[in-house]
Image (cartoon, rainbow, N blue to C red):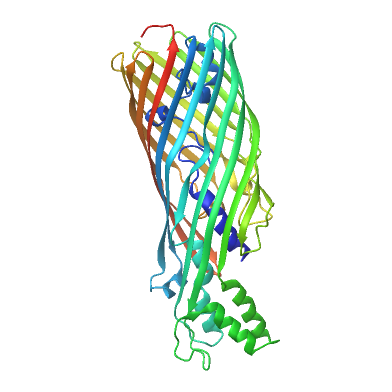
Length: 474
């Protein structure tokens, strides 16, 4: 029972996890990222996030960028579990979770003067979307699909069940960074930042109207669909003090209607350190984002489960991350950038919905790794075209995956352009699509094989504006 309702709470958060990045971290911070992907050596305004040390190499003046992303995602679990046949005759069911994020904004600001730069950025560091499972999850239904077999085993023929379940949720981690950079030599600079992460998760869900059709003389002689809760309470009242009556009372509590309305909040501050190298058309960057140790606190309005008391705290870290990037400028028109990300997932702390003894980070073999490649081509002085590709490699045990937090290796492809509208203003547009590699995992529920085929689709479109107020003529 605890496992089941933990799923109800946590599935919403996982359903709206990062569209690009690690387990809980977004890297699609800007509109420029969507059209280019490999932003590690950028000297545009979004360097405030991607290349903070590089801001010391920007033109003197004030630069800022504002943008928004429109993200669509569908997470699908095709589950084969024999007891599902008691509901419609098919042992395989599909459960879809749909996420639409119409507002994933970012704002980046840089002020550069001689050897120094001050920068700030605000964006969505994780999540950022609402998730809806109109028919709940297979993990919901599998707990009750075994009722017909269990009741039949007691001597009362039962051939069907039905139920209603739904879950909606919203998860977002707001990230704000503030820092400064200094040019140490003509070709090397250093930056330090403080990152503020504020996480907010909201969940609403229910399970209700669980029905079964046992044929029981004197109670349900015609084998009609009846309320499971009413049925078990009736049996418990007829057999007080007996083992059967006690078991029926326990079942009645399990199948009673349950509702949940909970919000979780938490925050943390962590440092970011970076170096940037620029010489004769070559650029290189290394950045280290320290672990952000977030603790979420429950603010619960309704908790029919009794498992999520108001004020309870759970870990929700953003892991440390190492980023390196290398780029080369060719014939003053084409820039090629290669980039690498490593997330220190095993050193983070996350709640494990399925075990109180095995921390979820212990189900990670090695940290998530990402490989990025991007190209920018200056077609004219006012038109830039770009494209990029990213491969994300998760190395986790099969036990890590569940409907609420599965991670699929993926190839993401982005393309778009930047168009100068006037001397100080440029428009960015882009689109990125993720191609995810499906994965099948087999386990057991109530001693019966339970096979889940996980798949996922996501598309993100972006639009943004870059402003640069400098003395240089363009």
